Length: 336
Image (cartoon, rainbow, N blue to C red; front, side):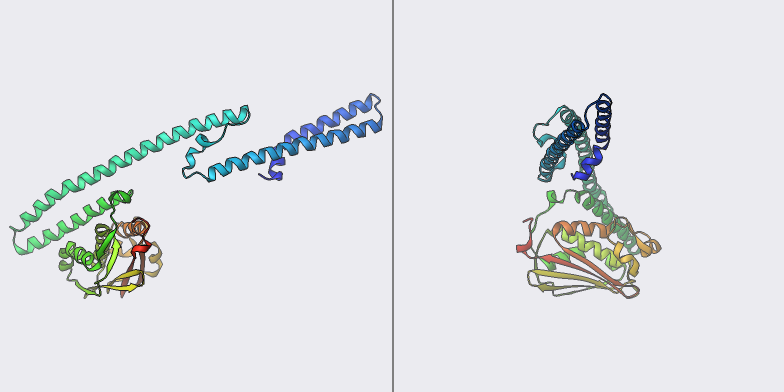
């Protein structure tokens, strides 16, 4: 609170006080009071006026700074009204009572929303686990079909499983700490699992996968890292070129390890690169080829942030796309 703000807030009161002082002066002058006495009275009034208002200003300013320091020290700002000292004055007490009532109502509404969100997430997780049973049964039935039909149906089932898995990780991404175990794992194991999970998709699209220097140890959550890498493989397969090749290579950088996923696909237009991690963004390639949800890279970014992975993407339209994942060393992990 500044003096200018205080005076602006008290402008009407100050104007009324000046008018009253002026009327009193005119009355005393009309009743024959000497000019010298009037001057002394006006000086006394001015001094009292300044002292009262300056005292009021410093008192309110000190109170405001006290409340602000309490608010700044709280991690949960909505508990402010529960932590303030005893309110001063009737108006402040009534105001804080109303604020507490509003805060408690807001807290209740937030708690209800969080409970509903938690129930929805639990339902999605149960649904994902339940849907896996008929998907597995469908895969077993596919073995009894002829070659061409079996390959087509298996490919479609792989797409369904990819969407189901994405839904599961999207539900868990709201509270990742509940399903995350950071530990030492071989990078080649993560890559092998991601490739195996999407083997049907890669074979169907005639994609050759090359690996280089993956004999590195990183510290991360294996399941989540496999999911992130799987999303990158799916994108490379969806936006493949005429002779598709995906290259996975790793490079140690002191306390970090960089995993690079490169493809020779159709690339991404330069003006769309800043938006590829936005939720629901499909881009011109996604619209032209169809089947894109705009959620894959969004989830990659979200989960990478929690796992403290660096995630960068560069692309040249019509030629290539390269995504770099930077895994931290154990010493840099704050969630271990």
